[in-house]
Image (cartoon, rainbow, N blue to C red; front, side, top):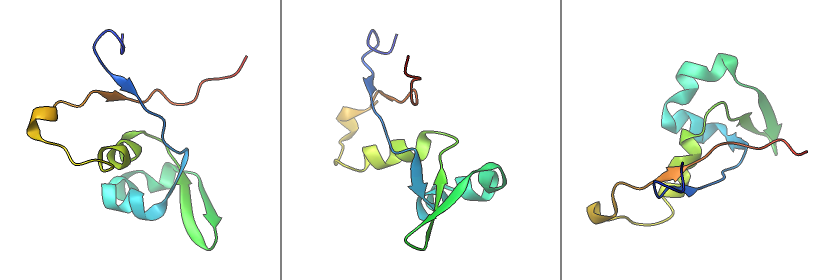
Length: 81
């Protein structure tokens, strides 16, 4: 369905820095249900949702209003068989 409607599949990291979660506003709402770890004395969390990673992808290029809507989709990891 994604391909049919012109969506590009993206894949973002499963663990992201706490600063990103705070910047996106997710930290205040979801922190109590997130899994955390420390890497080099910084807090990281396993993502419970994909939108902050999508923001990182969006910010990699400058966009014109003519580019909108961007059709990006992230389904998350697939189980290997």
